[in-house]
Image: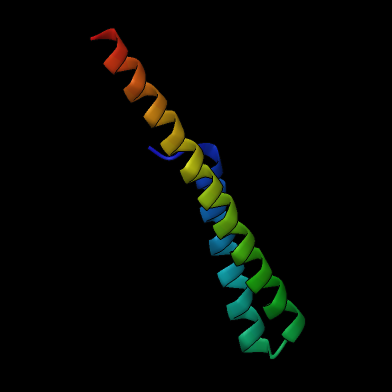
Length: 68
């Protein structure tokens, strides 16, 4: 299950790709660059969210092992 950071990161990636496409169609280099930056920022945020989720899952697994 995705966490908030993963979901927001994916949304930012998609918005960035849309900006890039719009920039390509209109030959707007600034819009294209903004889209690229937004896409990268989304990937970073999503990666952070994934790492956070995996750490949480590992902690839960350790807790379950201790209970047994």
